[in-house]
Image 1 (cartoon, rainbow, N blue to C red):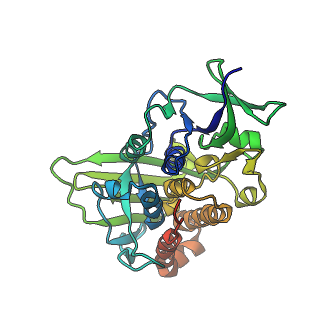
Image 2: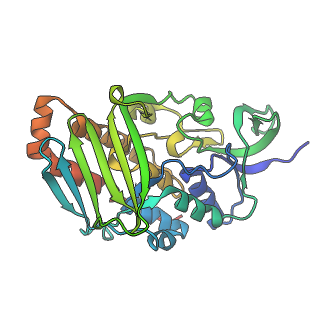
Length: 334
């Protein structure tokens, strides 16, 4: 009979690699199954808030990320109607235990940094899991692969994204469409871009966009709007009620990252939460993030006259502070 892997992680995205590195730091061997032939670098970049850097520090790679990415000093939100700055929030403020720290990190750089910290052979590429069975004896998980082979595992961690096979096996409801869509990109300026160390947001009139410098020569940009306005990537999230009531762990099988808590991008916390997953399991934290992200996005992009008036007169500063407050979280040590 073939051997049994102690721990198998499905998916070599942020959550999968962070979980694998956390286990490695504790001296626990694992195997990561990745369906792609190489690391998935889609997404271009993501906002890395204070909570994510605490997780990266716990994993031992925080300084390697800091070295190549700008530290932001403030967040500026502009009204899409008037073009004027509706809110300016300093990002140099003190958090609950450490000063706030926000950078925009290139996705491929972070993935490669995490991969390079893992023992050779940890990640098995071109390994797509399509089904899960439980053997009658010993509660061993039998993982069926797309090529017809099988892998036996005692523990399975599903970090296989928003269309997770593991989440489906656990009985979690499918993520639902948010009614919004996003387009993202990374612009390179070999001679420098001229932007300062700040996050720029443009909100209202049914859309939200952002300009975030990653380094002195690269800028991440994004555009989120109602799905009827453009053909791009539909945004999905798992309802907070499903997170509260659903099974996220059963018989040595659990989920993390987008397989657990897919969320809309308004807080910039999707990737950060995936990194937190590598250090700590926390259901209620995920519920708060998913809920806050959806509400902030709804208010920022609404074309309703009443909401538009409140947003531009009173709420812009509050929404910006919510983003900072949600990042003030410490996942602790491994």
